[in-house]
Amino acid sequence: MNNLLAENGIKTLEERKYSMELVGKINGYINGVVWGWPMIILLMATHVYLTIITKGIQIKSITKGIKLSVAKDPDAEGEVSQFAALTTALASTIGTGNIIGVGTAIFIGGPGAVLWCWLTGVFGIATKYAESLIAVKYRVKTPDGRMQGGAMYALERGLKLKWLGILFALFGGLASFGIGNATQVNAIATVANENFNIPKWPVGLVLAAVTALVIFGGIKAISSVCEKLVPFMAIFYVLGCLIILGMNYDFIIPAIGVICKSAFFEVKSIAGGLVGSGIMLAMRYGVARGLFSNESGLGSAPLVASAARTRNPVRQALVSSTGTFWDTVVVCLMTGLVLVTTIMKNPDINMDGIANGGVMTSKAFQQIPVFGPIILTVGIITFAYSTILGWSYYGERCVEYLLGKKALIPYRALYVLLVGFAPIISLTLIWDIADTLNGLMAIPNVIAMLLLSGVIMKETNKYINNLDLQDDTPVPVVEK
Image 1 (cartoon, rainbow, N blue to C red):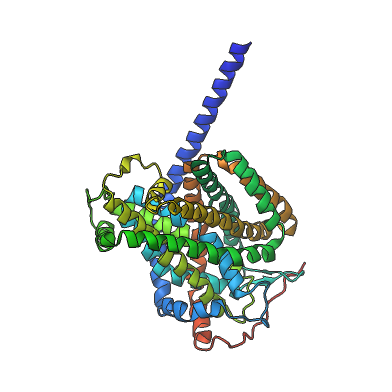
Image 2: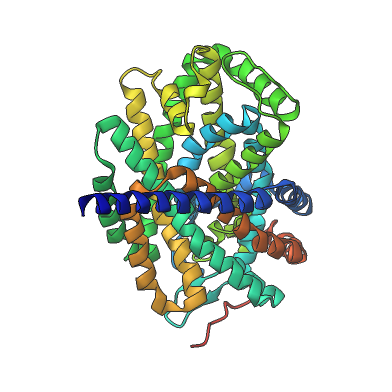
């Protein structure tokens, strides 16, 4: 009997392993199609096109958007302040993609991936502006006074393509469990285990409890936590990066040269343990991790931008676009420079022995005596936890669009349940599935922006030179 049970147990384990491998292969094929040249060209072309039609909105984003992000607009319709909406969006975007994601991109795509990640951020500012503008433009107010918007409402109300809005909401709802939940929880559990020898499963239980305390309070509770957490975690992490770059100052200029060279040319071997992985891999993983990090084109940040108190769409669109600037143009670039300069400074680092971006980043922060690992640990935990909170709201908006308000409590319960189980799930498969869902989510969102580009130009021209102008169009009320 014992032998029979043992044989059945082995068979069950083998079947599970085979099932996981099969899921991985299927997702790998879909991921290869979704993140092939067509998607890369579509995203980059959209970034450039929107930059052109908005007349380089990146400049206004930095000169006006940052100032507007801390301005108050109390008389405007909305649930939370513009700053609260921005920090909630930043909570979602400044996550493990800025730390582990950049390292993974360098490991697989070579140092050239850093430049493609950064370029995705620079041009992606225009895309974040455009997707936020149409989200606020076509947002609605529910009977109980809550503001809702996003690509699904822009597709439904602006283009009469509700079926495409449903697809976006479906992909967004599923993505919240991957990009916003499992990957982040797994990262926290791994860091806690490697640095403090804490078993992974208790970490999941604790995270599930503290997540439930916040997300069941809705957008006001989530934004309240993010307003306090995001500035602290960003400044704390950036200071750590600046210290390392100061220690590696002799390698900053050479690192920039290596990054630029390997982004556009086939480089087989680079000094300092770095190896070029080819233009296609550098471009693919740079763009993919850039999108994973700043989410420009993904359509996620507009879901919370629509809840902001703002008197016209352009004001909030400018505020939202600053998120991409902080996330990728600043934080991801600093992470990339930290990693590349560290490897060039320490050529004895065995790249073949680095299993993932997290290990690579850990080696970089170990250069700071005593406090380096602490800075990285606190950074990953706070970045990842804030992402869990922000994406829970994104998922709620998508689920409510599909199934109505009655689905919110079951969704929150399922979201919290996954937080508890995520530490014991394979991280590699989660990252791959998250990449796939990102691409699928981006497609209907990009279609909305391109087909509504005329509206984007019209609204920009109407408000850009008078950002205090009141919008004459009343916010529509959704009927029961």
